[in-house]
Image (cartoon, rainbow, N blue to C red):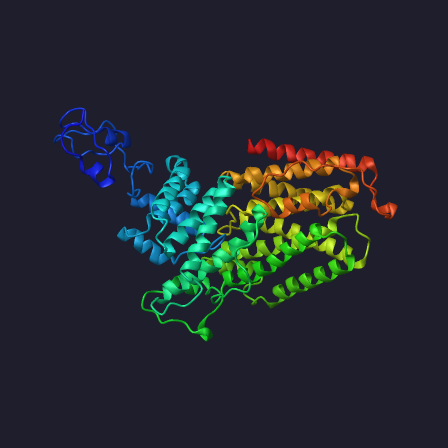
Length: 525
């Protein structure tokens, strides 16, 4: 039976307020362990808590307690922002939170991602509920064409991807892209202050980067094309975060590109590498000469990219420590992880032992192994160095690709390569197990590697790393599950007998890789 008026807590939270008797605490406050204003003087609820937690399913558009939001913001800016996306001017966002003017889909979207890093079991358990609330709030406001809804779409898409909801992830990214087009986000608006303008630039380039990754992840066509108008590259991260309202608009000469600007330049090459790998499997006839020319051009682009990086952006421990001091250590690591991953993809085809032994084949195969090993070493360093962790979701897929090259080395490498490859592979698996604690999708990624490894062991020795449609799906379409590869009896092109390892050697090496895989399966359970 409903008695009296709603308590202050239910009115603020816009909840139905029900009391069993006059002067008693309502059922909503008892459930949430809140002090209910309906209590008679001197009465208390049965249990007292220092920090009331709000259930995002029932609070309408109300926000969780400020300390919960601030903890989530801390985790978000430490581990997520400026890695897979760059969406906010931190000081401005925190000011909106303090004033309670923040976009609710945005803040629940942040909570849906960042709560996964909370040490509080109650907050940790609510991550998916927060993401669901962000979805509901966004759907209610979807026709509002604004920057905040683009940001919310990206956050929600990331949460969907983390929970293996690939179709929903792609849908929210597509909505973000369309809103950006309707807002003409790449064009200057004379009414924008400097923070708004620079934020729009970063959001536009975030969508560009995401399009390269997410479209490939599902095997879909891209939505962003190089012929479209593009805004200036993102400003240096430290300079951007130091901006305050009233600062003067920057002209072309005073704009200093930051780490994200170099990420964008790199992901542009990544797009060409994706296209190159797709062409390898879609062409009717293998044109070896044309393939070599295209591979050489991309190799030159990657070499030029690295050589043209400013001295302070090139990788070294000194530069890493300098970036950590500026608060950009994890972003710096993300840039170099991406570089090694893209290079691994470029040279991956040269692990195919069917290929004729031309000079560049051997050189490019060694480069593939080098970049996969360098990626593994960098992941290991990021975990041990401090303030440099790479804990965002897509690191899982990149680690899986690196591991597949290490498996190749364990199966076919020279004896002196085996121990370092095994140590790196074990280190990669430790990183995957850690990532799995935050992102359920990493289990799918790891299962893809297990499928890959099993297919390698079931196929003939020369046929494990041939770039075909199955291999393309493994390398690029990271959001999809990977079926076991069909194995056919194939006639191997004439190759030196010395390229084949004795069958017993292959058997012994495969036992090592199988044991490593079993260990990681056990750790993930």
